[in-house]
Image 1: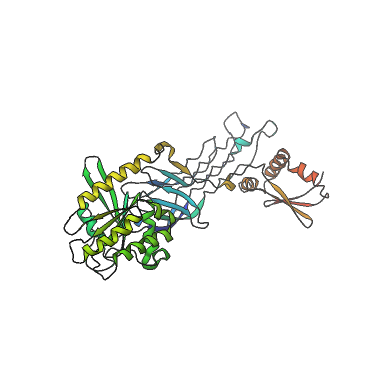
Image 2: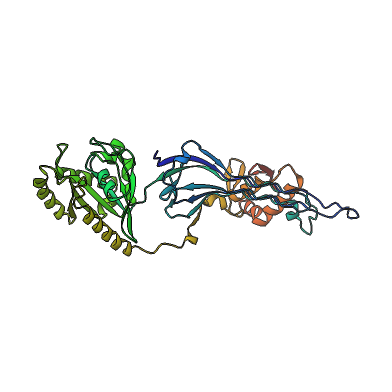
Length: 430
């Protein structure tokens, strides 16, 4: 079964909580803080696997969660990091944010990695909060929650050349005779319901991948006949091989077919009309083919494209066609920029809001109350126990350090006003 779309939920592991602990040994009754940090949660990572060709593994299972980090322990023992969760996808997979539609990454190269959800950072143990004036802190941080989101996976086949044309034009037959692919072939429209890939090997070091895209019909760019599902696979190809039934077996006009398919390509994506296109007049062994070839050759030449006449059924002209396709692909590849080194192909998805600094905040007035808003500050406070008096004292010093009190003073807010910072609220006094 071919599956080229999937929507899944990914959840990185939560960071382990920091530990509140103190050194208690014989003859050392007050040894100071000894709480270890929590371990980092595991991340969810997509890895491109060249052995995969579909997204069918994600059809039945929709939820994927990485391992949580372990909590810190006494005696300054750090919690163990959670294991990363590796999700393998085929080359050509596009990863999108399901909620926003944002394209996060286009994974095309084997071994390429996308860290889609980073594991939460482990909370700091109380040892990390010790200062010369606070030598025995009795509080620690909670671990950061791992990122979670729904993502859309969309596979676009990676092929050097794509076969397009009306149903029953002979695309599958051509693929079967020039490669080892064995697509389903029959004399009725829509025999091919899923794209097929084949490798054309002309000689040592002379091979390329060709894709048989299911037959297109009028209105395909609007989704008629699952047209948009098929058309997007053509977007990655370097060359379009436009197969036309020049004998008009199904009663269609070959010239009209040529114009209509190109119109569908252009309406779906203007860039497709700019791709190199080789026009293939198939079924020249059948009656009525010769009188249509001259008409078709005239319009193809006007567009500046090559026309090859073949019979896929008898293999007439197919070898010469494949050699020309190979030569064209070789020239196109020579013009492309060199690929980045694999070491650079590690992508990390980090929404900026999740990495805002603590100092980045704003103050909003609502009637007689004031609200301090900042993603970094709120994220920090969510990891602390606000019922702990030592935590409140720690935050007071932090607010002084980041300039929160100075901004309140500069706003000339009345004394006794209520100020909200996340879930914490206090009355403001000079």
